[in-house]
Image (tube, rainbow, N blue to C red; front, side):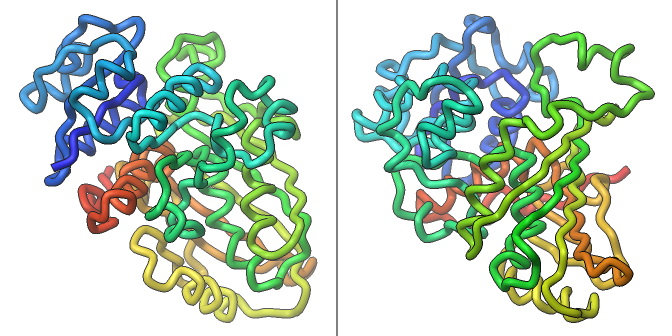
Length: 343
């Protein structure tokens, strides 16, 4: 049995992680850390966990958590937890970080999109937590950086095409996300009367997740440029990404489906749909699955790859558990085999 700590336990990502871990047969949640919720009983703060756990949220204190936990999850904003992550690693603990602090390999690129990196030494040892591309590295690492939710959807949609060289390395990613992607904090943008009955693009060509897409897709075999536009959709959860790229040669959709299925053969959470089928966020809601649908714009010789994920599970907490399973030597699918919910 592995004892774990969760820092940032009462944010949407943290509490979804907690919900999944409560069903994990090889893990015991031993410490919950927070900031504004210190002293709150997590089951009273989140009544859907009533009867499943009776634990108060404590201060975010690595030394205190180290007395009871073997592995630590940091579900904290960027730059906030970097020193704490370093402290946990120096104490010999394995770490899974939800923030952007360890996702990028370049401190200079991080600074361009965030701020000067507080601990650039962490970048050398961190592994990008996308098992479909980095499984063996995740198994061996002490520090896994959970990908951003948008990059997960886009990278999985495009990685096979980049890897096989069937597209030109200049891609467009158009993504729609549910409001939970913004977190539990209050803001005018996610206020009900502001976002309901409305769809809006934001951070056009400037979103912080873009360099993750560039880094990981470029690692698949070519230097890729990405034009990325995210949109906020008035729904609770889910991301739908529609990705466009020019094909380098003529193909049929059936050939494309075969190529993608070959690339993802044996991957437990990626499902490549039959030709003519397209995914929807509802088809993956509440699950760790990614559904990918493929089409070809024959007039313009363009690949169109559509992916759907639950942003809080495959896009965050589920990905973290999938990586944890690999790091601990558990079956990768443990506690993650739940089918999507409907309606």
